[in-house]
Amino acid sequence: MEKADTLIIGARVIDGTGAPAAERDVAVRDGRIAAIVAPGGLADWTADNVFDAQGKVLAPGFIDVHTHDDTHVIRSPQMMPKITQGVTTVIVGNCGISASPVTLKGDPPDPMNLLGDAAAFKYPTFAAYVDAVNAARPSVNVGALIGHTALRNNHMDRLDRAASDDEVAGMRAQLEEALDNGALGLSSGLAYGSAFNAPPEEVQALAEPLAKAGALYTTHMRTEFDAILDAMEEAYRVGRHARVPVVISHLKCAGPSNWGRSVEVLKSIETTREGQPIGCDCYPYNRSSSTLDLKQVTGDIDITITWSTPHPEMAGKLIREVADEWSVTQQEAAKRLQPAGAVYHNMSEDDVRRILSHPATMVGSDGLPNDPLPHPRLWGAFPRVLGHYARDEGVLTLEEAVRKMTSLTARRFSLSERGEVKVGFHADLVVFDPERVRDAATFAQPQQAADGIDAVWVNGVLTYREQAVTGARAGRFVARGSASKLDAQGAF
Ligand code: ZN
Ligand code: CU
Image (cartoon, rainbow, N blue to C red; front, side):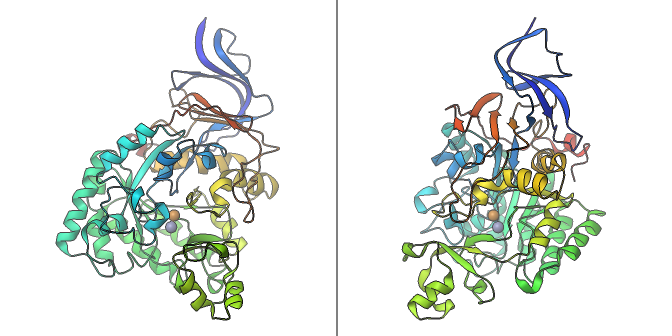
């Protein structure tokens, strides 16, 4: 007799690689996948827990490649918005903003304020952040990028200029400390005022230590509007200069004048990928969300206010309704609302589908957990891809949808032995009902758990079952794995 901790019996296993689903029984022991066999093949095994997964899909736990959960994993370690979706690993530190290494001089600059107020930033080194994550014992695993804007803010008196050579050297030293302690790479948020005046050379110089560490560069590009191809070229150049893979964050064609251009945007990725590793992520919605940006208040799209420090009562209203109520222009209303958060109705559905279904694209939520009226992607991104886009709309197969949430991400970010249902891999697993899985979060009611996520294990520990958490929190900080081993798998 062999002894396991858990047997999962009768599932249709989608292993995360894109291979077709197959009926398998799976044994889990000591946090790892111990056996994967044809139905009935575990007759010699006993276990304390036997999970009947007849008619359900067993997949690798989802990896949320694009999050702003940096402080949330510590403050709210149950991580309800993510565990309820079947997410077992989050990657924090995107868009140039990270909780560490950070030493603030005052309030966090926009958009670092998305991660919390000044009190939330208490990790002067990356090592201190890693310790805090492990002490908080979140329910999900946590991998982390280091934000370019966060580093700038540590070393510069003002952010509306280029960093000097000395300042870049200081930023690099902090990045190197983080890479030594397992950070996955560097992120930038060049569209934001806090990094917009950083020239390409500044980012290129900062990115130089990444290659030796086997880390990567991710970017919220200089623009997602009409000049998007130039911004992509800028991102590619960082990858070539520093000899590192590039991930374009939340790829989209923003603004009505840009709609339909996903064809040429994806073509650019395909062509460039022949010479250097390039990937991207996206969330499955045609509206974006961030802090309220005056440059985007042009009157040609609807913008919903999600929070406003001086006017919290305006949350949920369109900016033009606020402007009408106050009898002012939309620009003036936006100024009065700041600091504020917003949902921008700025994408075309065709572009979203084209980008989501492209083989280079990973799924990431870009959820904003500190927003009182968050974009529904925070609670709904993964089940929305599985239910709405894969099952109901047929935009991609279920196997391909799962691949974009698991192995593709694990390989690109060097998360060793995660992202596949494979013997020896960590037992991050989700069982979902392919008929019932669907996102419940809406723009009006965004904080709602998905339907059809039946069970979630993190490092072999049952964490979510029958729409409720078990109370176990078995996540941990995940350091960058060895890239050389992963490269052989054809990561990009
Ligand atoms: Zn972003
Ligand atoms: Cu983001």
